[in-house]
Image (cartoon, rainbow, N blue to C red; front, top):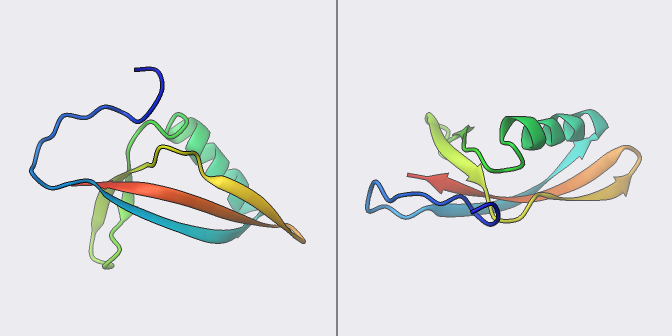
Length: 88
């Protein structure tokens, strides 16, 4: 169990939803994201509170199976692609 997605026991009949997206960040924002990934979620293992897509409240989420991918766009800008699993 030291590799792969975190194992969870089903507590409801609702399925985990996956959302994917990309964002453009500057160097400071990239450093914050890397710290969040490495320290807060311990490399993407722990769940975290995420704003609900509808704008009302928050949901519990975790990073998908793959780490966010980062590509340099130039002039202190990076494109970050990531997937999140929304936990019911």
